[in-house]
Image (tube, rainbow, N blue to C red):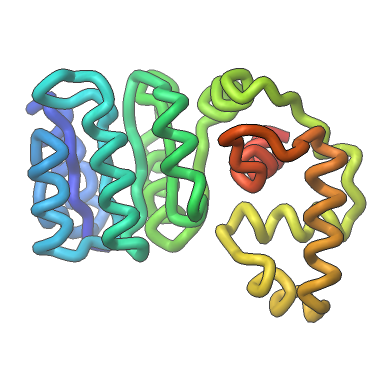
Length: 214
């Protein structure tokens, strides 16, 4: 697995690089800001990037904004946000287009090295890994509450495939049903989860967050 790290704290940056190398992974670059992340990703085409949220120059949300740009330009590169902070607006945008290959873990809640490495490997393979606290804060920011328990078995299958980042056509192919049937299941999911069309809300993202949080 080829990895780029974007972390402004030198001790943590070098520690992550050493840790991942010890687990047999190749750290192509370890950089300190969003611009350097994008340059390194373009140069090395990594499988996954580990990105902090707050980096130079303003230490606000540079890392997440760079991660969104990276995913737009290199959608096959996974992104694992690894931070002390949950920045809900940009986190929702990062998940909006394709939650597959995206993770968000909180530094103070990862106590096991194997857990972190395993999460990174899942993101690199196209999985979605979100800390439950991240899910809770994103749900609270969106004003939504979970209702996954009301879904039928087939609806849960459809929602699980949505969480993998599949389109309706991709879900139809996986379940060997018609696209029209998938559209009906998706509409039913939105209804049962209390997700009517509204404003800028991305209902697929909110539905996936409820699934991951449930």
